[in-house]
Amino acid sequence: MQVKDIYKDFSGLKVLTGVDFDVKENERHAVIGPNGAGKTTLFNIISGKYKSSSGSIIFKDEDISGRSPHILNRMKISRSFQITNVFQELTVFENVRSGVRCNHGLRYNFFKKPGSIPAVNEKTEEILALVGLADVRETPARELSYGQQRALEIAITLSTEPELILLDEPTAGMTREETSEAIKMIGKVTANRTLVIIEHDMDVVFSLADTISVLHYGSILVSARPEQIRNDQRVKDAYLGEEGE
Image (cartoon, rainbow, N blue to C red; front, side, top):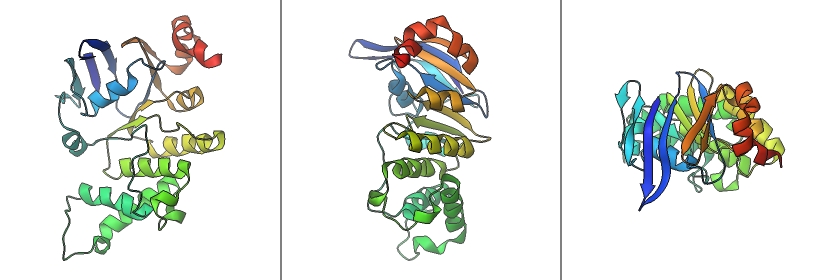
């Protein structure tokens, strides 16, 4: 994916002021920056929730700028949200199966039970095992721990077999133990996939990212390998210094 010269303003308030960075195939790419830097706005533009004021998003050599989220999902782009977004009354299995059914092009059929399609059930079970939720498959989502609900949202994100995964602060609000488990799980589920992740926890970023882009006052300050970011004085002054205080 290529993000090219993205600008976004809201009624004259400039949030993004020329964002440029590239994401390679099968790369794990983190976007970091202080609060108010424009990270979630950028994600909303990439995922189709917002339209940019100018600039373009290129995915697999195709300009996808301004396309609706459901169209992008069909193009194998899938995202999670900063606030947990699952079907609370459905079981863990039913939550994930709903995405798998859509990926198989299956709509609701009054005469056919959702659980009667072996391929859908098998794929659902595979995803639940991957994210560590197989043991709670029959549990309503509302009864899960916070960390399990975040894992469920990632499972739903995976249910459409995306080629590009967008994760918006997947460990926000987690305990240190939950975060440690989430790092392992995200590393496993994004193997051989392309990932763009927004995250404030630097342990998560440096554990997962191949490349880090630092967003500062609406533009990219630098994009580089983690070891370069860690030692970049501009990044320390703009962001990492804050994290260490």
